[in-house]
Each structure stands twice: as C-alpha cells, then as structure tokens.
Image 1 (cartoon, rainbow, N blue to C red):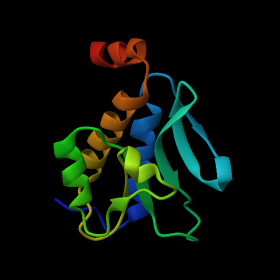
Image 2: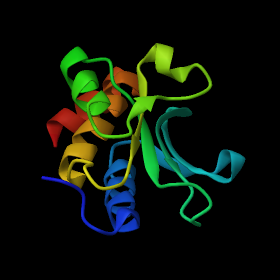
Image 3: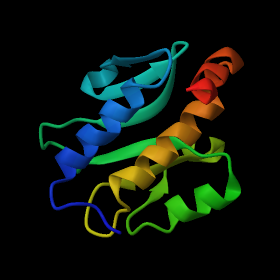
Length: 125
C-alpha cells in the first residue's frame, strides 16, 4: 500500500502518532519539526511550508526494517553523517508506504532512543 495523495496529511498522521508516545515532545530547531523523547530526537518531520519536499527521518537499528525503509523510492541515508548511525530519510511521495508503516518505523526509532522506563510504559498500553 502506498501513501495517500496528500503527503502533508500523511505527515500529520505520523506527527500525531509520534506525539502520542510516552514522554514525546515536539520542538522546532532550525525551523523544522522534530519529536523528542528524553531531550533526544527520534523523528525529524521537516517543514510543512512547501520549501522542501515532505519527508521524515527515523533511526532504524533493526536490519530488516532499515532495509525495507531504504527500498522506498527516493529513500537515502540521512544527511549530516546521521546515515552512518542508522538514520534514514524517507520521502513522502508516490511509492511511499502507508502512514501505518511509517508509524511502525517511528515507533522503532522511538524504541532505539527512549529510556527503558518509557518503553515499558509503551509496552504496557
């Protein structure tokens, strides 16, 4: 299943999912939306003003999930050297997986970054 025709609607679904995770907070460093847990970014959401193509960056340590994300048309290791640490930039365009899959990747990124107590809280839900 691929992304809906409105990438910003998909971005908003991913943003809402990320903000619902335990301890998640949104900040706007560099003018772009990021969601953090324990003061560490677990998803970069970019800007929604049309100045850059819509996309998300997530940290994926699981090899199978990372490979799946990298197979998305236009996906690439995240810039600024973050790709070396498992960060992937996934464009929100034709061929991108559905919002549900993107949310699974956001949760995987969260689990890599979040402290154990918050992961336990998530698992208890």
